[in-house]
Length: 260
Image 1: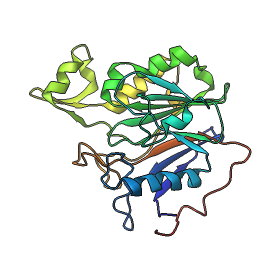
Image 2: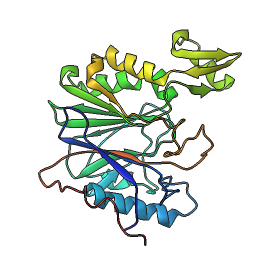
Image 3: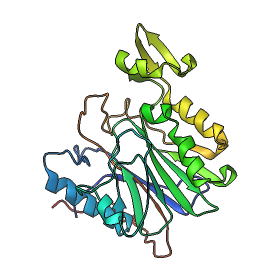
Image 4: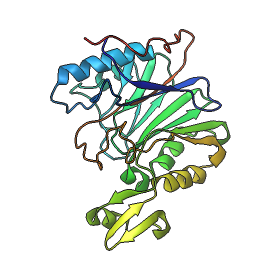
């Protein structure tokens, strides 16, 4: 098994869910999970190893396009959503209500938002960049699956937080966006407050701020993670989440494997 630096996170008040975030350390500088990596065999091996570490049968990882499509886990089609599968569907939101399955995205500045619906024992995993926030994908997800906000906990994994830089051509797409969401405007450029907009959109669908938990790190300020804005054009780390089943095994002692 290859060595993969990974954080296993227990979101607050949601012991039935595990979140996993990979990172770079002194031993493994390039723990890249991008399907675009030139060494495809190595990355595929990392996904196989992550399945073992997470104790799941499958990783569902549709192809994100910054759109509003949703993939709901289905035994008939799940196998086609595996990383590197040519038949992967385009989707930026995943709905999972089964054990032994993990949903994942490989971001490099976008947020991965895990919505945990205790009443339905289901989770949503949303890949949200600024385009997904402008398209109000959080509201789209809640309108489709109708989770009860008072029964939901939300974990927001790594992303470029308050000072996310937008180029002039990107700012144009924010024609109707509240100027208060920019922490600074320099000419036509803007620094965008993603954390603030995430919180406001979750509040809008009824999730109170005390039910929202943010990962403490920021991809723009920490060298532990790949960052598109920081110069990592293709490299990606992995964020995954799963529902903990009866057969869940404690992997805390097996996070470090041996190099192949």
